[in-house]
Length: 307
Image (cartoon, rainbow, N blue to C red; front, side, top):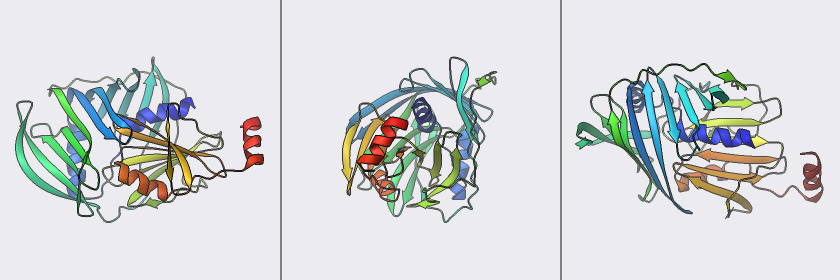
């Protein structure tokens, strides 16, 4: 279970991007190339209440390091196409995210809405439209290209999450690459047998991973929002979760600032979904994945005895 908790932090803080629409990809690439230090406030209005966090960010030369109150002091480092998660000087997990899929038709239309001033600096606001519905409003610092504020919306236009810098220093922090002891490294594998589809309601599976214990996960993105789905041979437990019903199945759900986590049991094992999706997209994605099912009395006894 520690491995799942570690990856929760990674996918909360370091979403991958893929070249869907040239305009969106160019904007995100400029933000990734910016050098700065900042402190960011995250506030999300979830179905289970408001979730808040403060994130400290340092970015330079394509590498970003983040420390979050949600992560309990864990540090995430990310370079071009990869990430590592470290605690107390050692790497917990690391991997690269590189899509083997061909780009599909762009889902987002970008609209320039206005020029603005943010933290005393000139900035530009862009609105992202998916399927005719506004899904996000992004504020880019004109000088550096960094995303200094972002608001995401539900399908009915309600605000889901707000992220904004409360301090911003455009000086290059000059990050050094730490010498870390790698305990575990995962590489994408295309030959893995899985029930996870290649496309889920517009989200494309970028990479698929598997470890020696049969622990599998896939990473999905629609060019802006992203999520990971995990398959495990045993049941996944989610402390302090709320039980919700979708269709005929029961799911455990937990929210932190910027991330939703769902776990459920299937006939073959356990599954978990982690991502930054608004609630309506969470339900659409879950409906397209292997459903929650009671494995039956004998299989449940077998799992309790042998895992």
